[in-house]
Length: 423
Ligand code: HAM
Image (cartoon, rainbow, N blue to C red; front, side, top):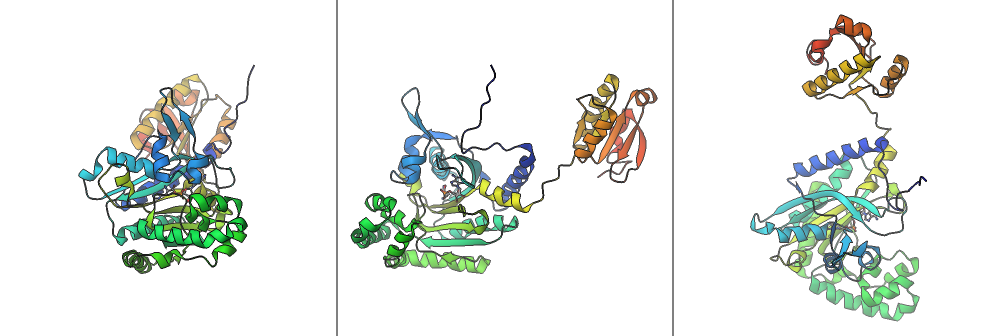
């Protein structure tokens, strides 16, 4: 008995109609990263659970309810990565990259997994592209990271971008701030939303991120993190802002931008757009100067961002016409002998010129094959039949202007690129 099996909720198939745009966008990102001196890093899609628990934070939404975790046969707890920063830093420390160069500019495009409630722009398996610049504590490095995140969207024509930046300061200033915030919120505990009540006990900073209108009202009178920054924190944050001004990147400072992962310190940022509805965060990142040391490396400052690839694709798909698939040559064959010739010719032309050649393999009528060639937007059609095989000459038809020439089968590859001035 046959069974129809569906994909898992929150996952998506990328079908051929969309894959071209995916490939092109990925390729733009790869080139863009390379232009800025960033090198690709690939890490396994699953890691020991403890890596994420310890870095993202035991009390965060990701760790408490969104990770895909299981016990392996040997009893080790494993988890599908919910993000890549922790894995990249684990790999950086494990392979002792810091001994090889004082600064590593790394980037990735890979899958992440979070068991969130699926909706537009929010999936359970999604793709993140991002960078991790490990080694520099200076504000120009922060500015470079924001610049790359922003310019990719600009280059791809994404409108209504907003860059939000904040500084959550050093660990010490944050601790003082958290205790002052908790003191302020304590009398309002029963008025806060349910989730904020829990957060007040486990992670009060996250209350600043609350979407509840009631919470927002209460927060209006709350102490601001900017008042707790040290002089050094402020100098660095001001420098980042002045670099961004000089680079012509508009930004909004946002005291409530604390981000949902625990490893941050200093600068945090997000880029949002109104173009994708509720899931407006295109990307997010910030500085995480303690993470390398925390995972057993020498103290090494770091800063990075990650962006949701599917969120970007949602916008690109809305703005672009359906990408036109174009092939260079379609070879029509009418019987078994000519099919044999068509396979040989196609192989020769592809190998000589590296152009796209498609052969008929369904043995359809000549009329259907011509229709197929049109559907595939073939630039040229080569027709081979019994007559062509016996005369040794084939017709090459230019589908754009309907002109045609005859060419010898044996060296047809020469007709593309030389005589025919194709390309
Ligand atoms: P994050 O804010 O958790 O940061 O995720 C970064 C981006 O991934 C989000 O802004 C969003 O575009 C996308 N994203 C997150 N969850 C989903 C989902 N369920 N479906 C679709 N897209 C999603 C991080 O992951 C940090 N590792 C960023 C970072 C890198 N910080 C420093 N370096």
